[in-house]
Image 1 (cartoon, helix red, strand yellow):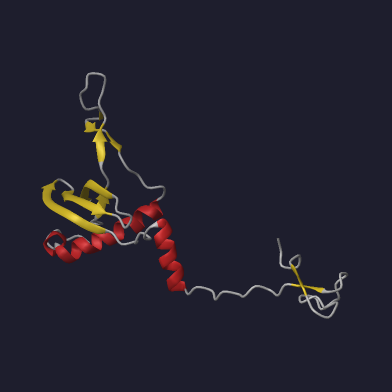
Image 2 (cartoon, rainbow, N blue to C red):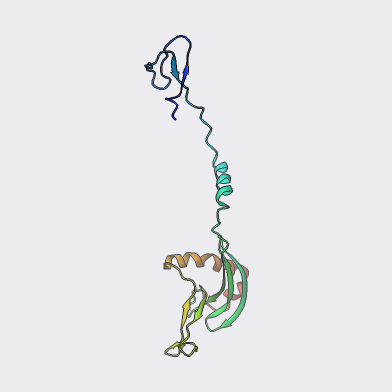
Length: 164
């Protein structure tokens, strides 16, 4: 029911419509006044209300939870990364190829052949990704923060190789 339809008796005959200022057809009645407007909540109040309904907004920060140095070929160690949403990715590997650009390899599992032995392609083992990125841009953005944190906490890894 809208406020134009709500009518109250008024002493002294016909009155003007509160909203449009025009006379009503029914003498002795007038429209109810508009309802009081409530003040709009502040941005902070809106954030608190949203958090109460949906839970806290995840942060975009990532953290390196664990790092275990393990040098083997291009690999420099294993790490676990916690995303801002709380998701933890274990068994990531810190890698450095010949060109010296450090990168983080996501977990993968070996591909097995019909004899349950690891499948190979020209003598190299084949691995299937457990997690992957939608694009190279997403991958680059993901890798920047953990690499920066590792450079700050494990400087010795990034020194002696003569790489970036």
